Image 1: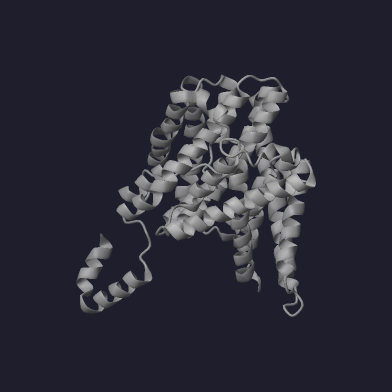
Image 2: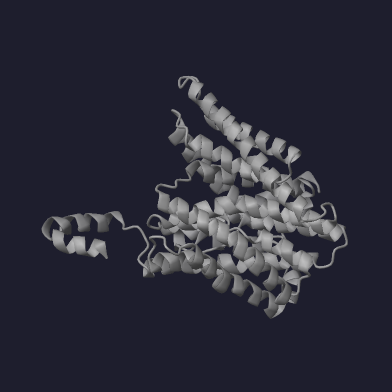
Length: 422
């Protein structure tokens, strides 16, 4: 690819993402849905202006670096106050890991027609809800606590596990691993190694930030953070492939829990850059979707995704929240909202290439089914999340309504107390 063509590819991608953000801001529609549509418009399914595979081997590196930034931001801002929220996240994560893997395998094989081995890879790829999708939706909807914390934490916890497990299952299909014992060992090795690397880098970064002189550190905290984050990504991927994802989350968690004089400003800057990364990545990866890969799936592929959305997810959430102090409305919303995001798309694209190179049948169907999952979950759940949250009264009250409640409380305290108890 010529430098001019490469510059045009990035220019079109970033502009389409920014335009989608603008339309979302003006219309109130979910930004992630419009970002996805913008990618379809400029990509192979639309005008054909952007072909992500033209980036060659650099595609995986660019996506990986930007995803690590998004996950670092998620870890940086993750808050799990109270034992109830932590227990909810842990139980949902564990039960979804077990239920979704098995159900995804069966649905992909019986309904979408994938072979057992490729169906196993699919079930791992779509295991996690994407924080790149969930976080913007939660912030736009302004969910009342604790739902936003639970949804964001679930995605951050399961995203690295699903990506690492999918890689190991791919290696098993390709014959590079032999037996489930090696898969289990590789999973613990990459997750554990990534957490150790990330926690170490996060501790070192926070120590350096604490020792900076505020008078001479203009811009340095951000530069230092990005430099160490991207270096950590490269070292983690070099030592243990796919360990950079858990490392990014762990680094963000450590830095977020060790306050420095620059914490608030750094959090805001990293959040802005993470939003920019999402604005770039969604159109870029959605541009790779081809109707030729989606159309052969037919009703079998659609029914497979619907089963994951309306049966498997609510079942896992319902079982996981038994005995927890969550009301029916909260459980219903948790059972509905589970969109897949950028990591899912990037993993599917790269894995499909490796399967095709190895001559494994079903590579195109795997990528098509993953992108169909992303399209349906982001589209349906993204468009319905805000109306559903309002219907179930799970949205934080606005400032005006809070003021009116305070006035009402001064005049009719008994009535307001009764309302709040409900």
